[in-house]
Length: 117
Image 1: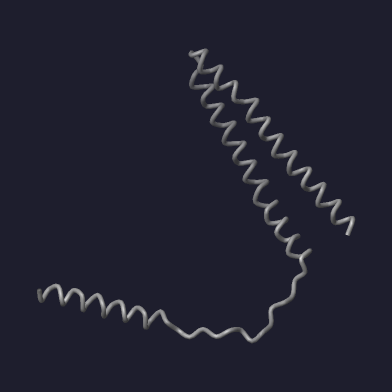
Image 2 (image 1 turned 135 degrees about the vertical axis):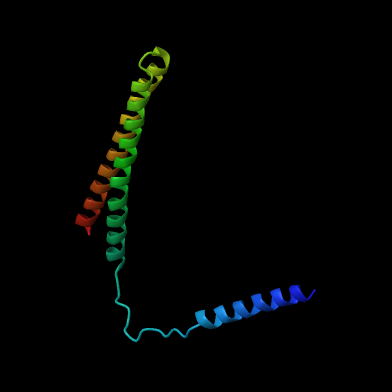
C-alpha cells in the first residue's frame, strides 16, 4: 500500500514539475502581419502543389517501371508470368501520360486565367 502511494506521489511530482517547466508565457509579436491578396495565395499554393506533384509523379512512374522490369527479368523462363509483367507496361505508360496531360492542361488553364485578369 505504501509503495502504491509513493509511486502515485512520485508520478504526480514529476508531472507537476514538467507542467511548470513547459508552461512559459508567450507574447504576441508587436509587428503586424503583411496583407496578401487571394491571387498571391493561390499562386503560391499552385506553385507548391506543382513543385510537389511533378517529382512525386516521376518517382512513382520510375518505381513502377523498375518493379515491372525486375518482374520481367525474374520470370524469364516462365512465359505466362512474363506476359503478365509485360502487360502492365502499357498501363504504367498510359497513367504517366494521363498525369502529364492533366498537369499540362492545368498549367494551360491557369496561364489563360492569369492572362484574362
